[in-house]
Length: 67
Picture 1 (cartoon, helix red, strand yellow):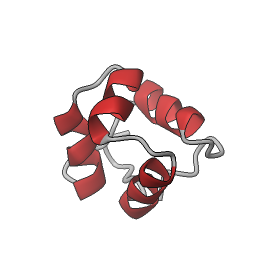
Picture 2: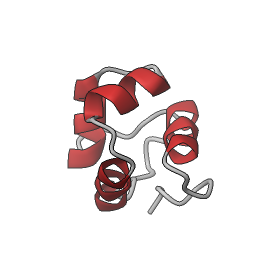
Picture 3: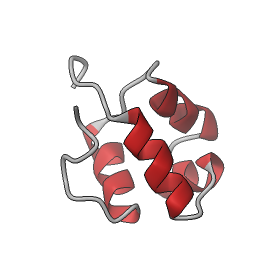
Picture 4: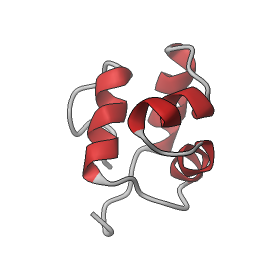
């Protein structure tokens, strides 16, 4: 997964559209707010299980956050 990059703009847009803060989304997926911030800024790529959790909570198809 280290080579994969996520679509950070889609993540930020979907999170905002769902009305979730970085803190809330992180808590629901078992990561801290700063991790979600790093995903959205492109500094870090989430583990597969976190990625799937975010896609599920945000109503996105599996794999849609991967570029």
